Length: 418
Image 1: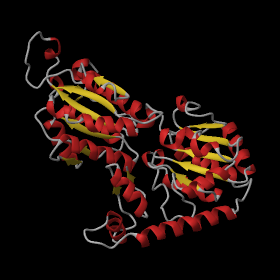
Image 2: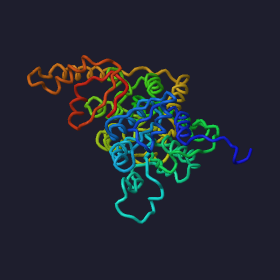
Image 3: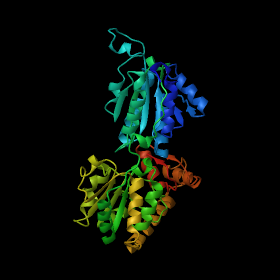
């Protein structure tokens, strides 16, 4: 078939093909001439198009969707001020390791090198995003669209997840490109990764020989949607589960193994621990990097097992005895399966005692929340909790507000966006 007779497809349709191959069915953004063909095509396909009141809010909603689905999400911004409004969410997604694709509209590429002043709604957008992005790609030629978007998804979802930026100039809005089969994600990027068997065996040895192992659980379990796999492993081990501040909700607060980080009760579990299994956490500054503060107490030779997607994170914040590099959704079942024939874990008495103390502590805080007018912040949260469904989606922010919520709210849900 000659070049002239090859089938073609509109670039907007091909972008949607690539999004849907990644499981993306929602397009976030305020419709604008630069992307209206994209939005119209999405509507025709039955995709959900969400146009809010402000680009920043849209981008934060895309962030939330990524956390609650485990899939990358996409948000658009009108060139100039619209793209600038995406920046707050871009910085947040970078800090929280959320795979959001920022599809930034831009005027013609001709303007990029044109020697003129006061160009309308034009600025060098990528330089504002580069410090926060895992990848910045500019579609200089229409034929690059697939390669650049695939690289964006590859970067967003490989290793430590994070946001990416793709610039979509108006030059290409109405262009046609060759219509080729769209690759599935597993055909061009790593979508699953188990740990090496030698690492699994070493982890099993440590856990089976431990007197009092604990699990340190972080935000990565939420972003990776590994809740079910994590719960099966945690319940097989029958050990304390200590969620970080961002990991809260990996198991309900009412689960009989959970004791949140930063309480005197979880401190007692840490002091007694001879093996720590860290999952989905950066073991960062709020956790004293796993080596300062409370970690200095108890077992001097405490061993660490670390499930982590990015090999470059191993051994940075603290020494790791057994690194398990890969996807926690793959590695948790590996460990659960490997532990089953080796040992049936019995619930230690210390765990039962500590959980009893945790239940009593929480109930005491609730009982002591004063019933006054104006309403006491703790009492407000207690009463709101009573009316909250078990599948509540909790979004919180605001410093001291979070401290009140964390103290008085017994969270029973799974989606806890902090």
